[in-house]
Length: 220
Image 1 (spheres, one colour):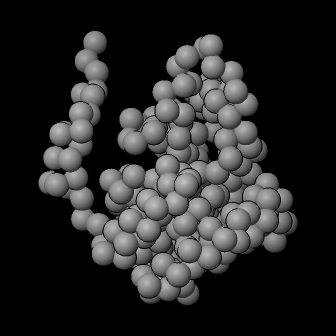
Image 2 (tube, rainbow, N blue to C red; image 1 turned 180 degrees about the vertical axis):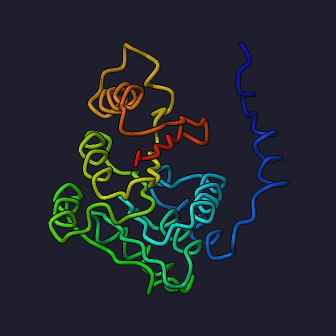
């Protein structure tokens, strides 16, 4: 059976050299985030570029993001939106999102981003209560793994029929394939992967991009 080619460091550098079109503001944000202890929480630049392409392909105008960190993904997605587009960004950390705010301003997308601070499950429930169910075109989940199933269910409700959901870290660094690893985060992602495999509400494709990215298209 044919498999994906494993990326050596040399091949990965080549991938970036011939395909990455990273705006300077995103390069600066990636470099700054690389100096922080939790730098590995930032998405890979080629993943961000792929996600921006999906925004343009789908014509998305309303995006929901669960998990902001320092703002690489939200800045990338907001830059891909049309001027009237809006992104609702959910996070719990004021210090990390303060970095994101600086880069939203540098990128000129502050007016496109609505930041909601607080536990994301509660915020998602509030968005549903505000009448936003079925209103988002695209959503991205990249937050604490133990709550992935809850984020999935509530985000699916907030997506419109035909909306696209992107779920990050689906490989969990390869740990999902090792049954001996049963920490709460890995177990939660493994359970969600199994659920997605047979969920009739969506069409799915799991891509070996960065740490694994699942695309789930909500049925009409």
